[in-house]
Length: 445
Image (tube, rainbow, N blue to C red; front, side, top):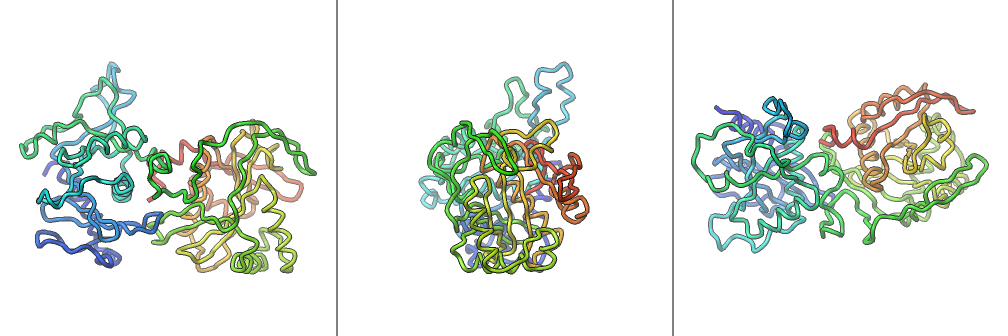
């Protein structure tokens, strides 16, 4: 059995593995007799659509969105790699980039009358999401688009111009492949590979108003260009700083981010805390009066005290207060701050950068504690920060040095310990995550 065939078997094992949650998805599409009739729900898209997958007896796999078949894929009898620095090098033949099976995307209907006139771009993005959910360990996924797809040229243009995919560099061998012993579908096997890029995908490539794709993790995206860089100034009792002018915050109650987290099989949502929302304030008041939370935050007190606290945070242009939830159930609170106009800025080695951002977090509900949940929400907060501002290159934390649990959670979520220092009121460690590292690593499966 060649490597491509073995890899396909591994993919299909992932798709139809023996876990108890691999039961047929609710309202799954009906399957022709040639199909393996066990659908697996792979993920819930940020817009609430359920993506499921079906491994078929012919070796291909079918992807459906809310029970609607969209595209199928199959592994061709070759592999491809994406050499970068090795291209043109004297030892280019020693390229160590891993070779992965080339996947062909096609529409599964054999009757031309059943084929759609066009594959929508938001459906293609969802298909790419499913591929990354099932093949997340790969840095790239080489694909070809079947010529029979009705708008294959448009789909390829979208993948390449959005950054979801790329061609191999000029001068790279193509295909970078093992010899093929099969003749079936030779025309599609000769098509140039597009390399789906994992780091680009998780940075939100191909989503937003510019592409007409509203399925991304950012649920509140402006229709205008990115906010301009212009200088502003903050002077307060704790801060004197020049820094970029920050965009106005979305109104209370606005859902900013949603992502399905496979380890806990739930969708993490983050919305702007609304002081006029009874459910938000009830949760905030109850959490702050929990002894476990109070030991870290020190904000135990009356309803009036907490209303005043929240209104102060809402009115502060440098702080974004968010309520976190799992499948709609409120579970925690986070404050996102701009580091340069925060009192932690003087402690940052080599100084704070213009778009550094920080976070302060609490988990208020005991049923949502534990490593799996903590990793998922911590990585999601960091993900949101980097998506919300492309110029943000670092996320900074400053937990108490004695708080071993949150320090360990920070490291588990991909942060490193940058330094330790003394505030006037606590001994802290400075944790830090870098944009490049986060998106290069396999942390969102």
